[in-house]
Picture 1: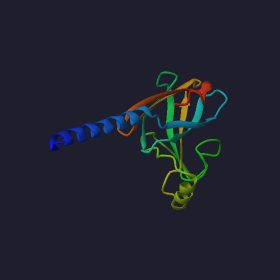
Picture 2: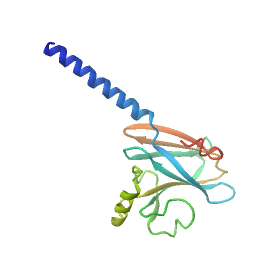
Picture 3: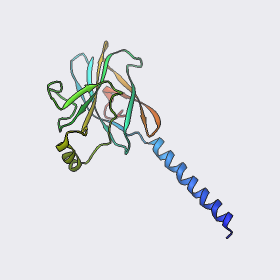
Picture 4: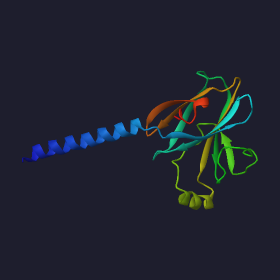
Length: 166
């Protein structure tokens, strides 16, 4: 086989692998909801405990509820302890901070062993949650985020969770 033919075949194989890899990354949806905390009976304040099941950081771009942007406030909860960003006592926990959604990236989920090692330094976030305050009862949540350079928009209906989980 000639050198040019070999280069052409090698280039075609490399291009095919690259295309398949990009399609794989595009089709995965790494942002998952692990739990929902309803902070009031009217469903106007909730926390979505979120996990990044991918291999790269997730950057939140926008969060909306009920097919519009009727939010009073949206925050990203970042925990540097085994206390998940769910349930009660979050504002009192010194290891959990609520910040604007674009201030921190959601890191890939870690194994329990790696989490234990990372907790010793307290400089690596372990758990994440999105806290939403709305004027109306929250029925569905739409999250726009960036992952591996691609923008995703995912919608979840609260009453159908976990089936509607991103």
